[in-house]
Amino acid sequence: MIPVQPSGAHDKPLRAVALGGGHGLQATLRALRLLTPDVTAVVTVADDGGSSGRLRRELGLLPPGDLRKALAALAAEDDAGRMWAEVFQHRFGGNGALAGHAVGNLLIAGLLETLGDPVAVLDEVARLMGLRGRVLPMCNVPLDIEADVTGLDEDVTAVRRIRGQVAVATTPGQVQRIRLRADRNGPPAACPQAVTAVLDADVVLLGPGSWFTSVLPHLLVPELHEALVETAACKVVVLNLVPQPGETAGFSPERHLDVLCQHAPRLRVDAVVADVDSVPTPERLRTAAASLGATAHLSTVTAGGAADRHDPAALALSLRDALQLHGLHDRV
Image 1 (cartoon, helix red, strand yellow):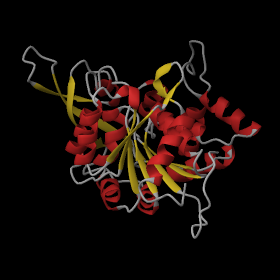
Image 2 (cartoon, one colour; image 1 turned 45 degrees about the vertical axis):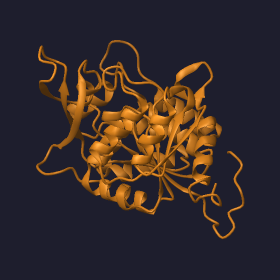
Image 3 (cartoon, helix red, strand yellow; image 1 turned 120 degrees about the vertical axis):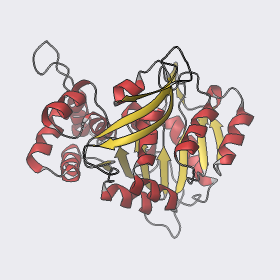
Image 4 (cartoon, helix red, strand yellow; image 1 turned 90 degrees about the vertical axis):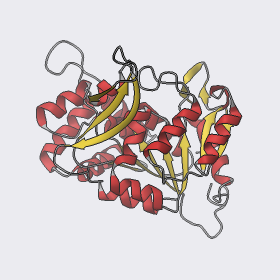
């Protein structure tokens, strides 16, 4: 763990909440665990591809893949924790019914069918893996992402509506806006424990990750949106290192913030963390960050030799510096 300063009157560790999904959320969680043992992941539940999509369609359960990745990222660092993380991430080979399924996906699916309550399931898996922290779903029911996309027709301004996480993530068009759809009528209901975690946090992180399919969906769940607006936590946006083919192809760093503002115009942010080599025009990013109420923090946060992957230790140092400049100097 990165050395922390004495907490003075604060004898409790920093309460950190990270919202997202997939590999981006894993990077954030691995960085946060270097700063504090009190980390909660709030994970998207709209995946409809691969092993998760198969289990979702066949059993009607929450897609487990992004939940599995978050659990693995927070697994204990002793021998047992590392073993469980490796087993959880292992995928079956071959050509049979199990081919492509991750062990963790099947375990989570089995517990969901047995226990029913997703939060109880994830807490039980956390106990099994010796987690330092907690993993929660964004919602307790699976969701679908629906997007307005241009550039798919001869008339490049024509808007076409596409549905599904995989379809949105891989579209060759330009995503303009997304919405969430639940299986039942009405807006999606947030996981109550996730709302409480955001309201009680000292720091809340959004990103990095697939912008339209992993990051922005949290802002479209009404109760979670209100919690993000109202929380007294320091709010930090961590930008991606490179645009994602299809979903955000051609996006500049500041364009990511513009889209964030379009989907949540009431959200104010304290800090924007970005890799210095991924920002061609720093002044534009600073201006875009300021429009959200934030200060831009640029440093090197990439893993050596991998321009598209965050280094957890470097990201942790950048987050620590940002938090110290935003009122949490005695907590990190």
